[in-house]
Image 1 (cartoon, rainbow over the protein chains, first blue to last red):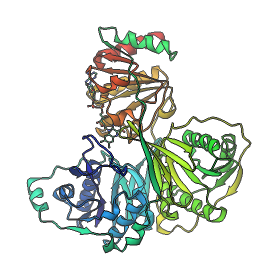
Image 2 (tube, chains in turn brown, green):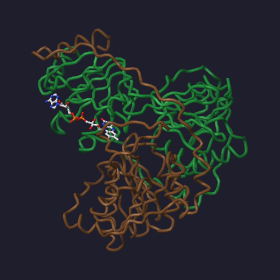
Image 3 (cartoon, rainbow over the protein chains, first blue to last red):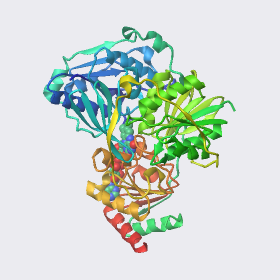
Image 4 (cartoon, each protein chain N blue to C red):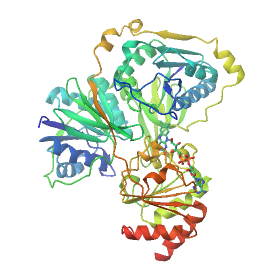
Length: 256
Length: 321
Ligand SMILES: Cc1cc2nc3c(=O)[nH]c(=O)nc-3n(C[C@H](O)[C@H](O)[C@H](O)COP(=O)(O)OP(=O)(O)OC[C@H]3O[C@@H](n4cnc5c(N)ncnc54)[C@H](O)[C@@H]3O)c2cc1C
């Protein structure tokens, strides 16, 4: 079974973030593999293992100036990576990104495409399903458990009330939530092997999408303003009276 | 007013419509004179509520035959746009199925999507507001292309207020040919037992974080929620650790809540958590670290150990019950 995992290199979410003058996220610093994508990589490796044959390909879009994040996925065990990198893609919206990834993934004819439910930096949360629609594939989002049986994929999908058992024929697009599997740490051997694994860099023109990308996104940020800050109230060090303070507060706002 | 027509995805929920859908209908009728809703499943049950909250028409996709809603509902909406003309925008709640519909529809219509929206205004066209960087800043955006704009709005961004409208007129909205894209089927549904109100609808939310120390301590959070007739929530740290299901998560990647009071227990107050709860009317925090960021937004802060403060609070509330 051949599995494609959509993965993104993002600015470290723990570091302070800022916008460029264009109102795009400043991505000029060091980029890392989005932690949200490590679950998809791990899941893909486990599914290929269980199937007994096939490989995992990581597909990405973004700056290819530094591909350490993708090498990280290769070190975990993915066989190769493809990244579409092009100045024309700056400020691309989720739909444009989906068109680019669809073109890159279509060439690989995978049995399964995995993605995170959303990226940690942009968190639009629609890309995987846009991708599924463009590839004319079924999609199952918010998977908390995934099993493949022959040409059918079965997923436990998170719902408001609990979970649904959902199945679809392969090929399909599935998004996984954090915590579905425990992503492995890359071994020393894995890290060494990753250095010689192929990372293919494609341009928009390579995919025949120059016109599509030039058409623009259809959305624009007009302004960014500081949000109103909330004021803090009283703070007490608990002297055995903390609970009573809370009770009195709840009474004062008539909750009890 | 520059907006004339808005459509709202009205999601079925327990034989009714989801609260988030009613919030969107309430917002839509304040922005445009012509509001229609789109639903699936039993439309006759939903027409009263959709009308009451401001929709004049209810487009009914009908029974989905066990399919996940994303593909068939998006297909039906795309056909409506073809046959009835495009509204200015289509408003969709941020939910599991809502995001699926939005993604499918975007690709079908070749229109961009604006997501994580918490505010809407008519500013020479539809203007959307998006909290960024953990809600410390707001970005405002608009569509520059052809209608309809597709907007995915977070729950609790608007109040759900009845307009006492007459039932909406039901119009059939069949799906087109789906092919492989519509092949995902729900085989079985599992409902986790739950008592008390839903997290988003509760007047009191008691949330626990990593500082609880272990999964079994979460029972204190649940007991407090029950005693206060509220709902139990969580930080992402303990969702990722597998202590509680994702549906309990409050924050950027979880739910937005705006209860009368939010009780944050052993939660540090990361911006990604606070963006989901700082709209609460009152905030109480219990944390043993006096410098925990959560205290910066708490109306009442108790610097203390949850292992002593929470049992004492449970005991005090029990005695009042
Ligand atoms: C892209 C992205 C999205 C995210 N989305 C979310 C989200 O939606 N929701 C969310 O919650 N987080 C989210 N996070 C994670 C967030 O950044 C924090 O890591 C998380 O909220 C921390 O959870 P916590 O407060 O429970 O744990 P910690 O930050 O570890 O805090 C634990 C707190 O407990 C206190 N404590 C310890 N022991 C005790 C005790 N005995 N008594 C009292 N207090 C004690 C400590 O002082 C500390 O303040 C996101 C992160 C990223 C990068």
